Length: 509
Image (cartoon, rainbow, N blue to C red; front, side, top):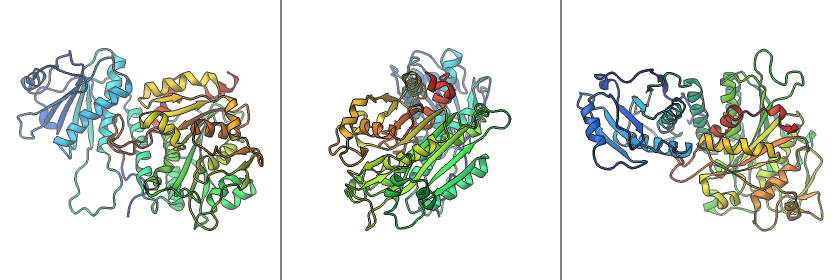
């Protein structure tokens, strides 16, 4: 049976201050060197082979060259060339190409050595972290139910050289969190059903000292969460719900006097999306087990922040249900009331993501957090606008735009800021309710969805909405080789840890 959670973490990351000893090549299955095209490789085992490899003609950005060292282990040796001024996304892409060649030439490496030959301590650390992130992403095997009579060894250790100040803890935790998103998103819908997801949450809560509360349908009915319940009522089982997880640091925490979280992460967890009454076509429905990727990003980001022991409170709210077809499924032209009292005219049953998020955001905002960030595979319009190479973001505070865009740039998980102007509301006016769920046509649906969601937050609440156009991409993305990308965790950690953002002060800006 498939495991609900990854059975182990990524490869161990070991940082070494110096260079590999000249005669040490036999310790590794591969030695991988990332360097600018104009730089020659430095002192390495069997140096003449590296010189010959480097001299094999003109060198181009993103090119990978490989050979085999002469000792008995036949260690794979490769040079990957990257411009010194490459963006973080491009750096990850080149690191991914280097790892791709490793796994083609040595399909099951157990231990590898990596080296970044670039000037500047900060840049070198970025390159080293990118190499580890790529190694961890390539080493991870997505869950499979295939019978295997010949289990293969997996990558156990990555030795990073010339890395005296690499933050190995954060690099490992970030890579593990991205792989957690990929694992959950890849699980088939009969494994990661609502009951399975709840069991996974219980296990993660125990492992990482989190508090878990589960709002089942009966409790949600008492809270007036009619938007969420409209979607879940078509399910065969009455096991849908909204999960609330909390991380509370030990000792004195930011926000302790007010009892509120500094950051709340909200995720769309549609475990399978048929489209409901407005049934999807076969092709559009086939991969709809991945429609819960937003909840996985929120969950994995919370786990990463808990493992990093941040000094402020963090919550996650996950909307977990299917959008099923059946005699009880909700229909166009129904009017339902959300938990904040707003009435909604249903237009299309396949716009279910904004329905479940409406109540989840409203409930999360009752706790008055400093900042809410939500993640959702919400609209095809965002994919049409950006392709799957970037994701869309919406900020309801001008002061959030710069750090959000910087987080996308610095993490390599690129985002594009879309408008959130109030005049778009005229497209979702309703004659029978406070707001229409969506417009009849699909023009600008990603913008209209964001305007719709904003109605379920109080005006003083600071908020970032992430439309996850990049949750899946054929051929992978950046350093990730699989269609399921895990996009979102690197962005979130950069936003909350690297951009000088104080979530408790955002609303005053």
